[in-house]
Amino acid sequence: MRRVAFTVALLALAQAQGAAADPIPGIRQNYQAVNAAVAAGKFRASHKDFGYCGPARNSERTLWTDGRGVPRKYVESGGSDDSFVKLSAYLDGQGRVNFVLIERNDIWGQSDTLRLYYNGAGQVVRRLASSSWALEWERWVVRDVRRAFGAASPCSR
Image 1: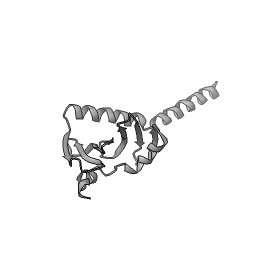
Image 2: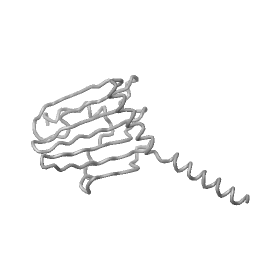
Image 3: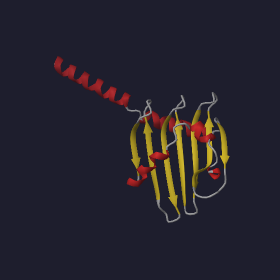
Image 4: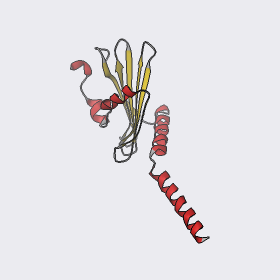
């Protein structure tokens, strides 16, 4: 009987440790909390719109910061005459990117997404892509949102 109780206790401990180690639920909670705060106007938004000057994925940029000045959400978007790309980066309370969503749509009705989930050490712990070529977009991921927001206009290149 003691062996069964010990085994059950070990299984419960292993399950609890596995749940605690999975960052995905916390990332999803942060995503919801950040979007709720943005919708409620609780974060300060800074916006740059460079206008259309040819194909660019970052001709429009918005950075939301909390009351302490910590970046919590960054969005850049742009496109061409026939397609549109939007990158949304969500940051935790320490200003670390923990979720990135990249969406692409075109005039022919094609759409693709790439979702990247990061742990506290900045490592990707889950990739969800709607197509295999959407994985190529990972090179577009923004980790330093302040630098990306302050970068020169894509029109000046």
